Image (cartoon, rainbow, N blue to C red):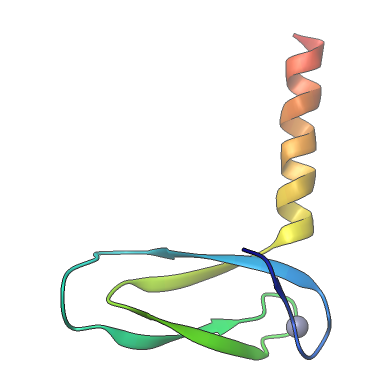
Length: 70
Ligand SMILES: [Zn+2]
């Protein structure tokens, strides 16, 4: 699910990683990768990794181009 930053208005997404175990969950901030603004939090025992959505899209395009050239 993509998030629109409340401060700069850019789209980004996040994933939760690390060791997931029952209990020991804490609030992990979801920070905007563009401007660093906090955009809420998730409850997890791992960590939150936020990334820029437009960069991910361009990455997909590169892979697509590679497949076409092949
Ligand atoms: Zn932002």
